[in-house]
Length: 390
Image 1: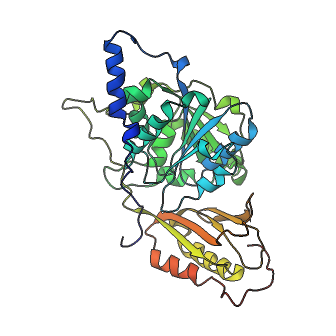
Image 2 (image 1 turned 90 degrees about the horizontal axis):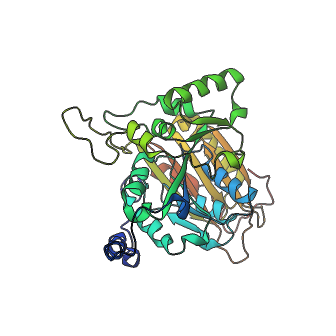
């Protein structure tokens, strides 16, 4: 693959759920007089888009929603950026059934796999009434505008799903830096787009900033999107009545933000749409089998953060440490802030001890990262005694 880059695999054949075939069948029924007019929103399945930059707390919010309420059956579509899907494991622990979690890890839903998004929703049409709502967690690098356009411009999908709201998570500690980041000419700033197209902005991790900093951040967010309510929270905990079932999405406002959203802008005054350029960003997914040495891994991470914290947008993983028995550790970080902790599930007796780590950032050296992590492995015949957790 050369260097470190995201993986875009060809989609598997899904002719059984081909949107073109489904649309044709609906059109025939309509011409036969058995179906006419638009489908009422009340007859559609609610669809919520959860967006926000890397590390803002999207997966934490999804898990909070799944745990906080017990009355609704929710289908979660997980769009992971990178070669190894970590969030699938973290969200899957809280699903009622594993079939309610659908992963899309062939790329970013707003660009390389928009067709996959249509096919994924298409596969849910026949069983959508089994669910009260669908949550799409986008990658942290997703521009929500093309996702909205994909859903609204496909008549078959639009007849079965209604966008309830676009919820944007914003990390109070780091969002200002991401909003101010200068992109190459003609490239979109994903963080700005995520805030601009949001119906609700959840300003998360407010405990990490001062009152003065918080006030300045709220003013910045409001200057970008004066229509969205800004809701402050910590650990993505929020009153669910403010973000679920709120019917806040308005397509007209999206068109006002981006007249070229549906490709209908013409004339000499038409602006050239900005591109979603991820050429400077890469995702390194590393998987190693065996036990990691706690001191060595801590030393590696300390050195990496000391030199590359600004370039590391997001780090996350599931780890197996030597001397920790069957305890499985979850590892998450945003820039220089790193947290370790035990996972809800433990390593099964016959489960291979494979540590999986994803690094997302700018100009990452895959060879260095991979070799450094492998150097943290403990020799099979030299298991150390129980060590303190990382």
